[in-house]
Amino acid sequence: MTQKQSNDPVTRRDVIEEVKANYLREVEAAATYHSLAEKEQDPKRKDILTKLAHTEEIHAKKWADKLRELGVAELPATKPSLWKKWQLRSSSLTTNLERMELEEHRNIETYEAQKRHGDDSVNALLSEIQEDEKKHAHSVRALVNTSDPQNSLQIFLSRERWHKRSGAGWIGDAIYGVNDGLGAVFGIISGVAGFTSTSRVVLVSGLAGMIASALSMGAGAYLAAKSNREMVEAEMHHEREEIESDPAHEREELELLYQLKGFTEEEAELVAERITSDKELYLRTMAQEELGLSEEQLPNPWRSALSGSVSTAIGAIIPVLPFFFLSGIPAIVTAAAVSIIAHFLVGAGKSLVTVRPWWQSGLEMTLVGVIEGAITYGLGLLGNVFLH
Image (tube, helix red, strand yellow):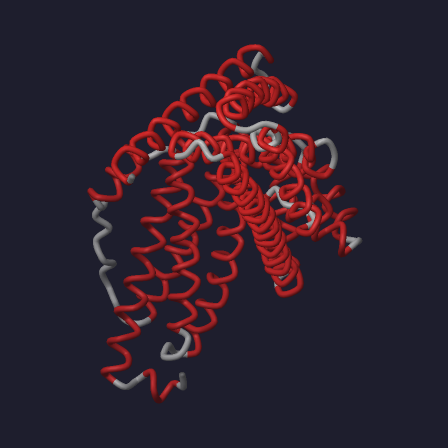
């Protein structure tokens, strides 16, 4: 805004009010970072929070100097917010850091909006402080990513889950597919057998259930894998845009992440320099460090669909097989016996992808199958009584 515009009484009053608000905003941010630094036990993290607080104090001083330039003799009172103090005391460090990250982004947007109607000297200060706020947002994000053990565990488990999917994970998918098919069709067979003793009806119902279950599982697996791939691709695209639009801040965040892992400032700088020299390595590293994502470990949607359909069909055909060779009560008894045995074997097989003992998992699955069969058979009998 030109000097002429800045001398306009209304505009000048608006600028002064905005600068006052900016001063109070920075004072509060400095106090918050100091409070968080006091609660932090890790020396490296405490030092980062203290530096953030110091920078905010410098911002507050600059806004105070600007107020004096604008003719304001007395600075606005910086009364602590009771609500803010309660939030700091009652919330975890991670939650408070997430709030501060959001606050930094809001400050960036506020300062950008103020550039439209501030004077030239205020605009220059807004741009300077806005750059610092961007750095703060990146620093706080790095602190958030490493502050919560549960959050770190989730990223680790996410990586492990994708890793297993790319290798032996198909074993788990196949077992769960067989499990779903067996459970669903055994329930159908039991219910229909309780309703009618006609073996052909039971057979057709079982085959229909098998086809429906296999197609449903295949479609679900395909859509889930496709959605996961699209989600990761979108996040990777967003990360690529951030690297291209603001490489300095992204590199600073990468250096900070490695410092928080235990590297010295010089070591983190060397590692970041090596990584940022390769664009694709840079992108993959930032995606993995920030989000726990990797494009290479994504499941193939068609392979997931085929695996889900085939394994479900295999599980679903087991209760149906006796009705191809037997009829009446012998077929029903044989189907129940075969299905119960299959439930135990599938449950035992789940121990390959879990830490539970095979016999315990097998017995649990058998109990579930027996209860399921008894309930659906009983419902079939009730249907036969009331509907015939």
